[in-house]
Length: 470
Image 1 (tube, helix red, strand yellow):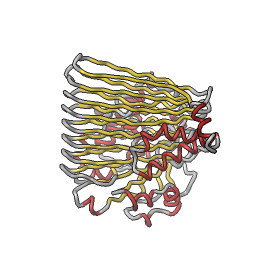
Image 2 (cartoon, helix red, strand yellow):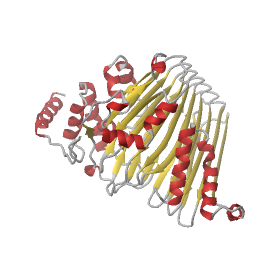
Image 3 (cartoon, one colour):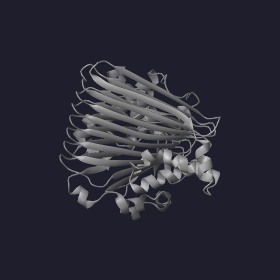
Image 4 (cartoon, one colour):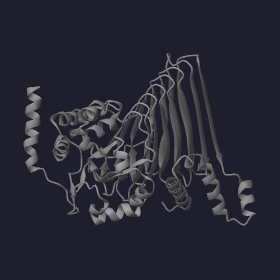
């Protein structure tokens, strides 16, 4: 232990000579790559406690010792030594929109963030590269005792022990290589706590913008919905397109207490140079309900499998998702559910669309433990291919350890019906418009689960994908 401490001290001493890569005077960037000096530099920037600094170093060690996953797309061409793991805007986090710097504010205004906040959100957090630049919650929600803040503030505030007790417990750094990477270099993200019995009537949202070329984003979202409470949380993601690889390896940990309900909706519109290696997991207690709504667009490669652990008796999970892959995209998505409590239920409904040679893979895992008697499981995945060069695969896995359960799985892969196209064209609709209408109808089960503004956004993304504009 003493030897380890001397090594850390030597590394800390070397930080005085650490230089940023600065391509823009308004941002700090650590140099490319990943080693102890970079992790310690990030820790210093974040003003970490000794506990967090040591945790980051432990995660780095796990990362270096862990092989890449043997599931999912091939990512051997992703070189972490070419990724900048921390890019910090030279601005403090603002609680008023007018205090956000103009260049950053203009980016988010084009994405409709302030307008959405005014019309339909109880609170918003906006992250730009590695740091939150704006965070606000409406007074009437705060008066209910709801806590919605950046996670760094939560580590040092009234709820610090709660955050520490839950941080990377559902997704430990030993889970897989990119969970360890996240633990080493995480920055930004949100903490939400909804007190017992509180019903948040309108959604909260976090929006993540990765704007720097060749950078990574590693935000951490931690949400605890206490007994009998109710929350809808929306996550939005986007990035401009560059000719170098970008990396997203965020982490979402959700705790749904007894009798509570949490809906977690995501619209991801990453650029097609993005490696999206995100990890999301929920723990659901007795009589509680977890709902996922997911729309995945963009990114060069995706690993995305939201996981729900139905720990409590009569706990429930519903996953509704859609993925659209085009030229040069390999999107590996799906869901995982672990049934532990008695009389639990889960519904997985996944849809994928592929065109112009895009690769879609639906990958799921359903585990029904021996003690999970009375479990009910329904898995349904539909794939739509729009041409002869695209691919769609379904890889379901089921591990059923009790006979006292009801489990069903259905998968369909098809193409757009020529008869349907002909029918619509006979009504004066062009062929392109007819195809777009059919695809929108295919995606309707997902869009109808979103608030109106986000359903419109998702449909617009589908139309742009159909035109090849993304």
